[in-house]
Length: 393
Image (cartoon, rainbow, N blue to C red; front, side, top):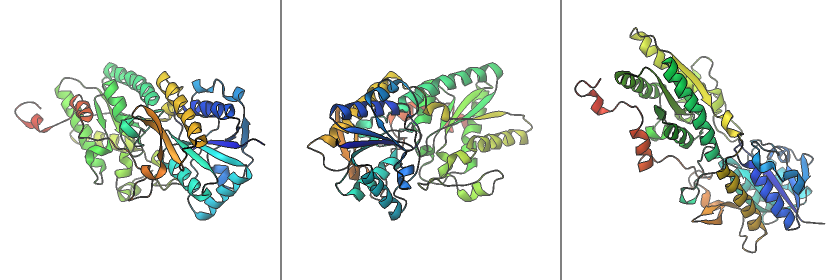
């Protein structure tokens, strides 16, 4: 009987997942392994159910790298939520006869994979391929996570359309973009599209953020834009700002429910961040006798399952090959995240990617002190101290 390798996908979708599945499956089969596709991430393994699997052949994956989404689907179930669940996952992996496992996912899936590898104690070789459109996994040399470039590309096209609509109709849009912790996607789309304003959590530092503080930034941009003779604009805002809001402020608002996912994160989709901020801005103008309409939109689900652009198609083929090469290699030294490092594919041990303070995977935030952020800010419309001097406003 051939040795078996499993593949599963966790977390939210990202363009390029199928390319990793394609490359890893082909490379494993070429090395005389049987490949088991595991559906819905860790969901069924957490229940001790080994039936939601499929033996993958090369013909099953040969052209899927052009497709968005995930042929193995995905789920957010957390195998490390308690010792009993982790034991059940380990037992189910052994029942499937897996000797190797490739996981594809973001920081939560990376953490889950590390816990499974630790639980299996050498009986399972694990490689994790990092993906997220949020771009918040701290890869070496500031390499992007796969899926980010495609999501930004698609997002820029959509924001361009909104910018033209705003100019044509003389209105403002407030668009919340995905990014649970970090504002990379918001800033990347806004900077490339030339949006009027991009607001990210990192600009407020580590302190709790009030809705009024966020509304201040947007109101200031609208007033400055008007002083420049333009009644229109498009502002982008990172959804991660919601995680920095005071839960006590949120829970008292009508229609807002603060819920948490299996990994302990606030369910951001349940918080109408754009509507809340837009409403505050409109109320301020109304109080001054000035009718102002801000159209609020959410942008994110439109990006996650887009067909990958050539950059991500190439990138994920490297990563899929690298994952299999690592777990089959003589230099395997425990579970690791496979990534590009100084022009070479290298495994980074899970321990290196963990935050010692939290015990979880580190998060790469936007550094607002860099030249890149400075350039982005210079081309936004924002009120600053100079605007309050003389007759500028």
